[in-house]
Image (cartoon, rainbow, N blue to C red; front, side, top):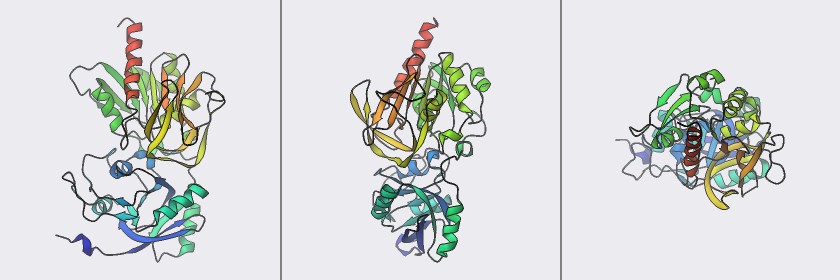
Length: 381
């Protein structure tokens, strides 16, 4: 058996587009890997983060200094494979300690071809991004000529304007059956990068979920005669995902409940006339406090997004008078949730499925179920 303490040490580097360089050691596959560099403040859940499709096109730096201490397994995944473009850590544990562990973080990254770097001063990196903003970067061998790597980084497209959802969406529709034998509702779910936890939580609440590709149209959704529409999370710029607006408006106009999270939240806001904008360094972590204005309570939430919905005064959404702000991020007062004033439409900027993260917000799935129940009762069914 290979001794993890005898692993080959291959010097690597992380270079940012502004020329800042961080030295480290290769972990996982060899580089180069190019993408937008962001940081995540979660202390656990690194495997869920690695497999979250919302991270497509990004190099993710973990602020917690020790990553990999409980290894990896076949259960803590949110999609079929890692989605990040690269992974950045201070220390990668070589000897995981957990009865659930099946491999080390190093082995997992190597197996799936994920480029990583360890021994990085992640505190300095995080402070740099917080002050300068998220920027493009590259992970490569330490002997890669700096000018060559920088040229590749600067040639890489910025996140603004990128449509990445179709690249991580399913190619064909599939069904997640209700967990119990008592199927109550049928939900159509747009897959713009859906995490497996979302259909599972709906399944546990008696829903059969038909997951549709990002390219699915209004006719595809209505043909299912769903009780509700779920609009998933996903990567990229919401302004570049234009195909969903028509479907969202048509479905909502028929008073079919619509529930969106993360990218889905942004797409719903845009469908009704709202605007989105790029945040300086995004919200990525499992500890973001959010004020629920309807309940006058604070939730600790899991978040992962680089764009946000533009807000107006007195909980309004400029350009979308039919929407109201229901939740606010207490870090920067950005919009964290919206609802339609008349139609059964709700959406939040964060991840109520909590993978990883706290479970404060799972009640939103129950609210979606309640909206579908109210519609059915109103129809006398």
